Length: 191
Image 1 (cartoon, helix red, strand yellow):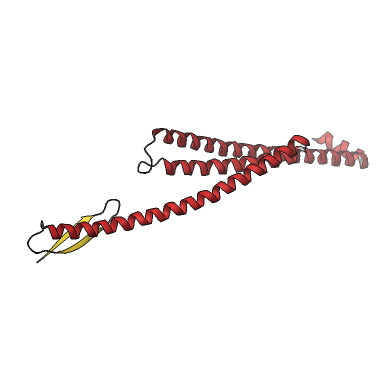
Image 2 (cartoon, helix red, strand yellow):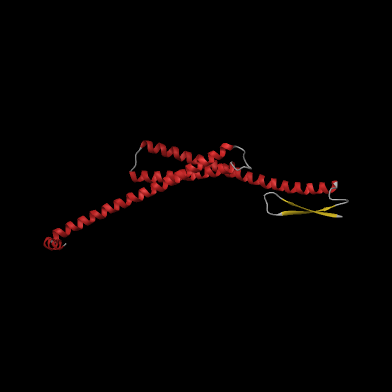
């Protein structure tokens, strides 16, 4: 005699079908043991996969930690250099843009890490979600600040280009005035 049992695993869209050899009924002790051992093996496999993912995450975090330390060292080195010498405003704008972009990327990573740790199934700390929301807002603020900075830089470049073009126009008009003063006076009388 056999019994067929189907159970839906939480979190998945599929069912596991277990064929249980039964001696007497579905409620027999042997059937229950067989079902529980099959279910337990599945859970152990899932836990093993989770453990592998966590170890992989730790390796990534270790590399991330090293990366953060390297960025801190670079930051200290730039701080030392900047405190000793002053560079041109153009170089300062480039350094500032790079720094803002790096800050934005770091805050995005921090926000992502924070959101992973604030998942309801991962952590029960209510203050973590507030920190994540705060981090997300800071990241969006940094990204918007970067966009504004980029637009301001573009506006400055366009204004410089406009000034240069106006200067060229004035120079051309002055050169024409010196070359043919009579023709320009006659034309200006008609306008």
